[in-house]
Figure (cartoon, one colour):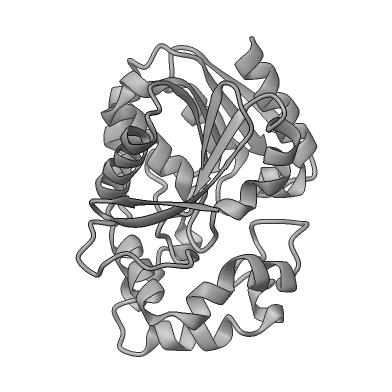
Length: 276
């Protein structure tokens, strides 16, 4: 892990391999470690960069005044790209990270040579209905502390009320050890999460879609077919239709976290897309 000090706060990130750059964005309540298996496949031939965005599972919290709205996260990604000297890269986004990837590509298209989206918020779905109630609940005094207590339970983390809807493969112990422990341990990280959730709005993804209708660079959508509740295949098909130059690949036996459930397939599709 490396760190970089940005105007918004300190950002930790993984940076492995050499070659064409793949910048990978994760979703809410997880961190860049979610890309570990894809990185192990691709780092011999590509430079794989996976930041820990301040979405509720990072080790170090951002300041309370940081802008963690969708445009704010896009600006943070731009600060990060500038600091690392990344002039051009393939941008990869999953789950909430896919929404931020769309907003970034719409606002800062010059750096994005290719765009890869996988089971993510898009169009009028930001957030998905299953988690929409969070936007009201995070404002209830004590709610985040209750979440932290529940996140101590591996069984709860694996349930449909937490992250159990997102992966076939991840166990409750995996989720706690890799992701939830920082949320449990840090009130400041939980406050970052509250600001992130408050910043969810379909207005951002719909506005991005309008701009991305003119994004003529190659786009690949890698969609887990077992994700029927949060980001169903029909959403992926509609999102693919937004772009002038997009291809949709469907992955079996995978939920939202395609890269967790089927990392070898995800890596093969991603590598073939970039190589082409």
